[in-house]
Length: 139
Image (cartoon, rainbow, N blue to C red; front, side):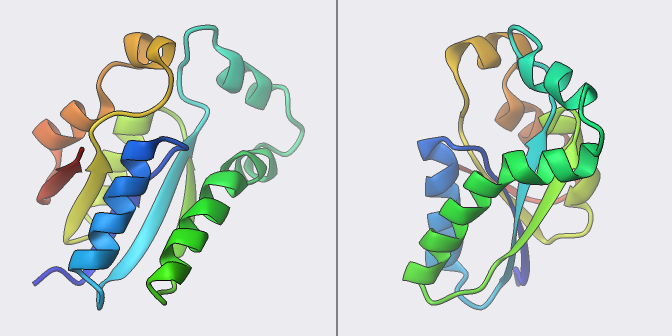
């Protein structure tokens, strides 16, 4: 039985679909939305900007807030409370580091910009291949 679900999210449509799938198919599960901030990008923008912040954790939380607000709005449509968590670093690595604490990971098939996907690689693919728990990929 799946009772704890990790849903990594960015601001992509596929991430929203993954959260909706989790909410629709596992209404009694504890759902944690994970936002990973500061991973590599085509121009190094987010990672570089974060490195210059005085309070790194506060800056990461601020950058994740829009994703969390959207996730809470979606969860409210299902009358479900969700937990949120911010991690710093490379998305696939951060997701895999947290996966052991959950029964499943529900992830969007792709997200971010085309440039991010070229530099970062396919996060969903890495998570799917290396996760210690079942992974459901939403498309």
